[in-house]
Image 1 (cartoon, each protein chain N blue to C red):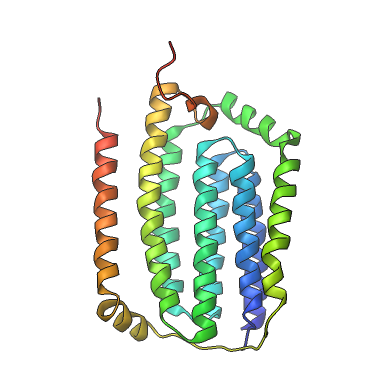
Image 2 (cartoon, one colour):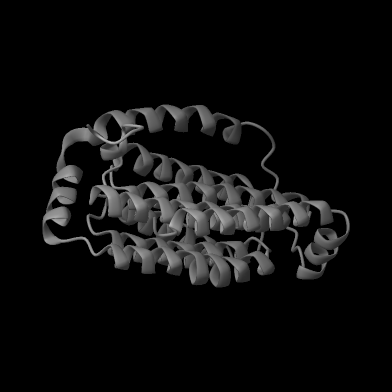
Amino acid sequence: MTIAWPLPAALALALFLLGLLGLLTRKNLVFVLMSIEIMLNAAGLLFITAGMRWGNPDGQIMLIFVFNLAGAELALGLVLLLRLRNRLATLDGDAANLLRDTP
Amino acid sequence: MNAVFYLSAGLALLTTALAITRGNPVHALLYFVISLLFMGVIFFALGAPFAAGLEVIVYAGAIMVLFLFVTMMLAMDRLALRRERDWIARPIWIAPICLVLLLAVELARPLLRGSHQAAFHIVTPQAVGIKLFTTDLAAVELASMLLLAGLVAAFHLGRRQ
């Protein structure tokens, strides 16, 4: 029944690094947003691990706030994604590297 | 409970790795939703039943389904899918993998040191609720303001010009 805390912490680290790998390699903005979600989730797992180690409800409370942040961030990210799609007809993040319309 | 943890951890890692390497965004998101369900099982195995329920209901059930519906609305055509597949096949993975492994070595070092005593506490939903709505009430108000700001900004950005 007992799980030593480094195991879930190592799992959180591995998931965070997978998310970072996706963020660095993919150009499609859908995958960029998904990788950010993976990284946020890994951080949440680390909070839960700390809550288990110390028997403290703060870990789950921080997880609730992480979900809150993920929801707000994803809503704005998706709206920006739809705007980019309507304006440039692409999902490539590199297509929007100018701060103005192309002349 | 240990076997449940190991099984879910392996499957969560596998589905997350599949999610970031798919060419089709809808397949990738479905793999990520499965990974979130396994994460809920892991939370339950770690003695956090309330967090496990939230993970399945709020994260996998609401946030990721919103993401999935918007992605289905984008309706990528066949050309875009083929371009995405070409992008994955290119050797752009080498440098990011090196960087990520470097970071892994740095971050894994504190895990290998220190005491590894197995302490297991179950944190009940009552404890979470009491703490959340008494001492952390200000944070709840701030979180509600963050959601309101997100709502207003999404409405503003989503208007037709």
